[in-house]
Image (cartoon, rainbow, N blue to C red):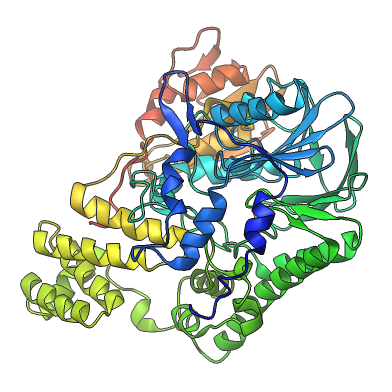
Length: 597
């Protein structure tokens, strides 16, 4: 830690460059007066770093806390520090093109109003989503009602559905640990999230794309502004683009001022670091010497061709090194956990701030690479059929002499500052007996100390959220990512997928039914068949007898699956079939336990 270049102020200079004005006050409210974003709550980051924070993460938080309107280049502005992501505004012939309109409509509207106060009331003439995560599209109805070009990578809606609908309930719950919205904003609490300070909690919206970017080299012109796109790897796929007439390069999330995660701790598909590396190498080749500034969807820009080349090369080398060394050590028989413990970055990469793990981390990225190639099983048969956590905990605690004995042992490891093993022991004690208050209190203390020592923001928030829930019980989620706009944007096939993942298999084992759905407004036909506890869908099915045929619009279908009474649907057959289907659907648990059984 002492070797890190804390004296280097280049990032602070770049973060301040082009500053126009802040949002004052930096608290944004929804229509009901509830605060959905509070940048002023992070004023404490102006202090010197306390013992309750990792100095590197504290430094990163101070940089992310800089907020307001910034000029990036002639005709290009960013609003930073008003949500987890940045909103970029590119001025065109008539109006302004919005890139990545934040998470919430309230924050996006506030960002656009801040821009207009200083640049005039330019209409929004286009939108670009750089990829299908909610912090890059959710605020879109805060800047436009639609009727304009909306550009996004190919497969955008498919990835949006998978990320926010199919696995939405579990990811929303786990997101509370990653972002820590229930934690106090303070030197001892939440002080950042890696890509930014936090995720806003306002209304999420979506306007479906009108233009899909399907290949690298594709060019589009919006309001007189030329875009040259590079299609980045997923999942989900992302967009890097050059504004050739402005000599400005948008790196989206592919090269920012932190190590990115290859597997989000809230849950996601594993990204392939080989493809990430090749993408960054291609970026350097495609756009070499054609940009004077590189900006991104998070953090602050980088100016100067030489500095841009260096950033791209170091980020490229980072992911290549993690990938290749993980594969090398896998081939020597090391498991993911062992490789993560063994892995050390080259000194030249360790000495630059943007390779540090504020968002992703070397430890959990290595485990993601291992998972990408070998999956969850490490090859040791002892791990092939282990008891689940509570059953294992009961047996471990019994072997160790009971809950009190486990707590006593954990205190010894805590005294030796072996926080990691103290946490393992106390986790067993809590899972064996969640009413063991001494074990809960001590585990909360251990989690707090681990959080205060973490450089990675998601690790810190996860540890501190674990401590909070041990002390106070489960913190209810305040919102979710499944908004009406997002549901309306689902294809009919995706709508049936959302029903399929709710079927209670055992309850449906002996149920058999079939329904034909004729979508009259779309001219599409689907058949859903419940068979052996699985809901199977067919597109344009062959003629055969079914239990029920429905003729309806997509809007009526959406209303039906949301449990509303729907008029005007033509029904032919046994209408009781719908009730039989609904009877085997399971509701997701919104606030399931994580640190207790």
